[in-house]
Image 1: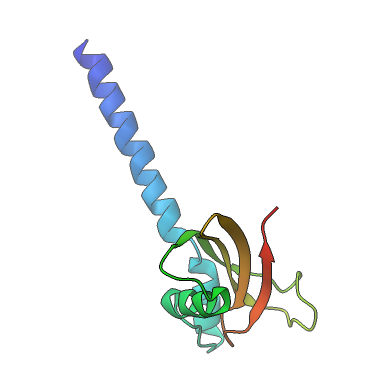
Image 2: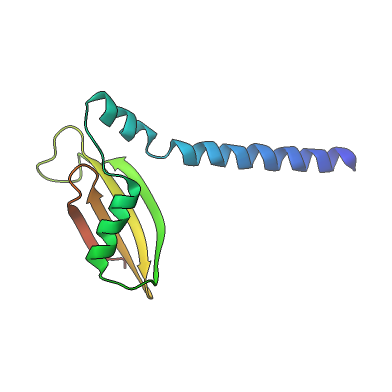
Length: 114
């Protein structure tokens, strides 16, 4: 019984720790590449503020997911590298998909999620 308990605890620790490492890696490649190319990115907090201004919503806003990705293939006029904050945001009872250019702060996509 002790072996089973210990195994479960060890598995929980390993999977929990790997989740933390994975979460920490989110956007790391984009940040490192931007730093190598001397490109200054806006912060996540700045991107959230831009989204809040675009939503023009009160305090009932929940940021469900925010990812920093290279989206050069998805946007016209993109160079070989285009850092974008991709957000899933819930305002009231409506979910939005919002993409914000991580360099300029320009809102690239703003749509109600189907």
